[in-house]
Length: 372
Image (cartoon, rainbow, N blue to C red; front, side, top):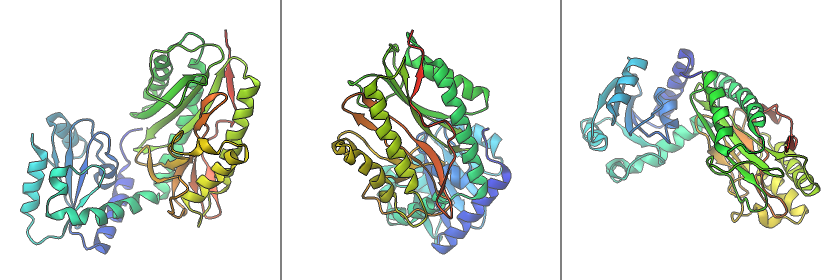
């Protein structure tokens, strides 16, 4: 499931060249690192495992890459022989020197999230905003081929959550649950999965990387898992109980389920990301839980999905980005509940011409597994 099909790579390259022409950019210099490879993925189909790298993408064809790590450089040479790959122990300096040789070519840097200070303060700093916005627009709207990859990632997320449920039982440490999911994804050819979780009760205020805590009867066990298929991520958020859910847990879950329904119902062309967040939050406010949709207890009410696990738009009430067909995101009213602790519940979806299509198929329920 790793590696883009050649036609998708060519399609994205054509879209990028067209956008560069509109912005009068001859050469786009794209920065990346292991955490933020999404812009490199879009521009040249490269995902980094180590070090920094800088791609020089020429509008009329031809790509050069300066990598920091020699092993990475060799891997990319093998995977993409059409790219001119070099290696430098000082890639920032090497990139600055390479930019200086480009003469009268119209050059731009991107993205904000990955450009080191040493380049961001150079003469091209004024180009960063325009070039980043250009790439963000391209990455927001998915082609049919990209939607297909997103759908397959969502299907794999459903399967991964089924594995997670089977792994959750009394006495097992949190890391064992994630290990089972990771083993399953690797067996399916999935090279990447971003996953966090939590277990416990009212004391739990959020999710985290897996730890050594062992599951106990009565625990709420939350997770969001985010597998990657052909470079595209989809996410699922669900909560389960070790043993039979108690009345407080059932009441709390009903609020989250109603909020998820309301948020999804608000997703349609012309609505904003803020409209979706407000629809979710109003459910909590109606139940006297308004303070728990503030930044003190939660971060976002969903976010974009695609080449990055937590992309634009952020689903928050003050985000005015207008939703349009071809966008992909997750709606998740994840936050703390004062009676039961942190609870998560979310589905991935794509915006369509008439509303949205949910691509997560795991039932929306408070799952339970044996408590003994």
